[in-house]
Each structure stands twice: as structure tokens, then as C-alpha cells.
Length: 592
Image 1: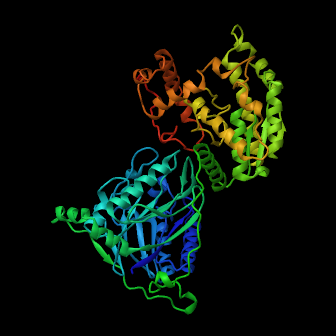
Image 2: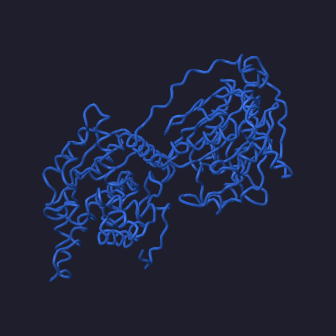
Image 3: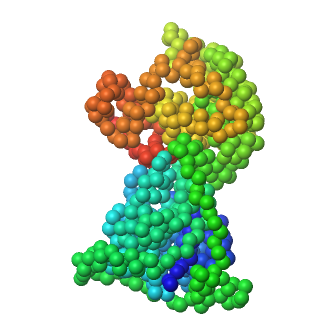
């Protein structure tokens, strides 16, 4: 019986921290050795981190990444290790390097370079033209990188049809958005079943600027059945024993691949690299690490429970927690500060920050004016007390009055309008930035995607800060997330009144959001159609929305592009976030 023990190391590297990333990989190799793993795979670009962006234009960064990868080779005695990194000849490549029994054997270079959404790989890499297979003790292994497996045909099918690959490893850095993991799982199971091959998918986990990688690595058999899977939003080490004879038997009974090979006769053959017979362990203490040890005689694998299923709000909430934690920690901040208005957005941000960092690293600041209701002041304090965070009460009225006196002469004869409202927001922004400068705290902004889309926000006011936790979260989802967070706690931290009061910026008497905006349950679907799907006003109105309202919303979105360009980065949780996902000119007179 031909059996192999396969492992996937689902890691959270930091872009540019090559030595720390090297150490994570080295530690995982030793962990695999303890479990007598035959083939171990790491995610895409695990050594340089993903996405390095214009670090890839620095020759010193490229050379150091390659050097750190090469230094892993001596650690691979007795096993095969697949590592995501960069590789160069006259061009630069996104590569999966094959290290085997102490040697750098070869690589698969990424064929399909994504250049949409948050991706810009054509800016840096040359696509490969061929996809080799690697033969280990008679077992044929195909290696691919992320996008290479997303389409029927292409590198994976070539490796199976022309190269005879029985196992496909896909090294990935697949960014999260809500619901993506389920679709990705279906796709991977289909690739396994269609190719009658074992498919091993290993994904990055962790936050990198706006992007969150969700992990959820998978090992599937030749029927598309999941053998083992990694946790979402956590580092993990996934191990499974696979039966290569089952692959051979399945292909005997299913003629599809034979017919494909017959039709493909005469095509350029897939390069095959034979891996040398491993020398095996050097001492009895390492006797579980050599390839000569059969699965039957290896130490038994611990029983793993399947990851807990999450509903959509739970999944999104955990993504926001991970994205916030990694942005703060990887940028070497310890504490965050945010304004607590008594409203639902700031309450949710405070909860996410506490869950990401612990309450002792979160500071809440209430900054009331004459327009701030008693309910808002009370709810902000109740929230802070329930979460156990530091809390400051810093009224803005005296400073606001001083601003009005200073501007009295130039404003004479003019009625109060949004100018005076925005002054209040900017005073609050200055307070928070002052605390940030004095204590080294990172300011979290609390605006949501609905507000930022239509410009219902103040430049240098509530938009002032270092990280926008809810930048890609619509207001209707904000309410779902707050209810989820309250349900998770023994004592709900967010006051019920915060959830039931009409949302308001409280910058003038008796103000509510709906004085300016449509109800959020109407606004958010229009925004999804326009911002995420690029539908025209006519198309959206044909879906049942009043055309005049649709055109007003679209006009608000278009006029606010200059604001969004100056907003801090925020966590991507939808298929198309505001930022790198959606790139529109500021100077633009197109009307759709």
C-alpha cells in the first residue's frame, strides 16, 4: 500500500520580517518531523510575506528572501517541504520552492497572475509557461500557487493529464471576504473529484493592511471528500494520511483521464523532476522523520474535531478582530484610542478592539457638546464600564465656542450649516490625535461603509485616525454584528438603548441620520449594486428602487471620492471594498 503523511502549516507571517518568517517555517518543519510527516507545505509567499507590493522592486529584499529560503534546505533532511517565496533569473517569479532531503530541488512558478481587486501581481512578476511535476518514491506531485487552481484546466489539469500527478499541492494567499470560504471549498472539492487527485490547499492566515487571510486550509481525497481542515482566522497545523493506491484504483475505474490523455497526445510533455531517495534519519532519536517509515508504523495522529461552523455575523466579526489585532501589533502599537459617542458604530469598534487586544489596551473618550443627549453620554459610559476599558470624558463645548468667536467676523451674515457641524467633528478629531501623539496610541475611526460611501463623514474630523475598523461594513451589518457580540457575552456590553435609538451624529438639535440619508435598509442595497456591482442608475431603479433616490445616492457616492482617497485603511470583508478594490478617478464627470 502506498501511503504518505501530508501536512499543511497555516501560518501568519509579517511582510518584510524575513527572519521571523524563517523562524516560523523552521519551527513548523521540526513540528512536522515530530509527527513523521513525509511532505509539508507552506502558504504562498510565506518567507517575504504577502503582499510585499513595491518591496519587490528592491533588489536587496529579493535577494534576502531567496537567501532565507535557501537556508531552510538543510532543515529538510528526510522529508519534502514546499515553501512559498520569490525566485529570479532574468525575471522575478512568485514561486513554490521544493526542498527535499536537505536540498533545493526545483520550483513551480506561478502561471496565473491576478491583476484585479486588491491584486497587482503583473506589476512585479513574470508568469511561468510550464508547470513541472515532482516524483517522490514513485508518487507524482503537482504544485500550484493560488490562482493557478481557480480555473478548470490550466496548470493543475496539465500536471494531472500530461504529468500524471496524483497529489496536487496549492500554496495560497487567498484574501477573505464574507462567504468566500464556502465557495472556495466547493471549488477545491470539484478540482479533486474532476482530476481524481488528492488536493492539498494551504492558505495564509492573518491581517495585512486592509486584507485578512482566513486560513481554512484543506486536504481532500480523490473523490472530493475533505479529510482534514484548518481553523478559520487562526494559525493551524493540518495533518492527514493519504492512500495513493486509492487514487490509482479510482483512475482505473474512471476513463475520463485516459480519454483526456489520448486527446492530448502530441502536446509538449510536462517536465518531471525526480526527487533523490531520501537518506533518512541520522539517529534513532529521529527515527520517525525518514521517508522509509510507513504510515502504518508512524505515531498515530491525534483526533481533530472539525472546525466550529460560523454563521455570517460570527464569521465577519472574527475577521474584523483578526484584522484589527494584526494591524495594531504588526505596526508595533500597543494601545488604541477611539471616540465613544454612545452610538452603535463606536460601541462595536470598542468591542472589536477589546477582543483583539484586551481591554487594558483600549481607551475610550466621550467628547460631548451641547447637542449630545444624556442618553448618549450614559450609554458611552455604561459601555466603557462593561468592557473594562480606560475612559475619559473630554467635553468640547468651550473649544467649539472659541472656534465660533474666532470665525465670527468672516462668517457674519451667514446662517449656521454643516460648517458648524463639521467644526465639532474636527475638534473631536484633534482631541484624539492629541492623545495619540502624547501616548503613542493608534486612533481607530468608527465610520461604516454606508457613511463613507455617500460622504456622510468629516475630513479631519471623524475620519481622522490610523485605522478604520468598519470601513467595509454596511450599517445594516453593523447592527447584526452588535447583536452577535452581545449574544456572545454573559452580560451584553452594548446597551439595548444604543441599538434601538435612531442613529444620529448629534451635531445639531434633534438630528438623525435619516434627515440626510435614506433609511439604511434602503440605502445599503443601492450601495451594493452601485459600489460592488457597478450597476447603472437605470438598472438599479429597474430592481424596484425609486429612480430619483437612486440618482441622488449615486451622486453622493461620486462626489465623495476625494474624501475616501484620504481616509485611513480599513478591513476588507466584502467582495469589493472601498480602497484598492475600487479605483476611480477623483476628477471625473462620468454619470452612469
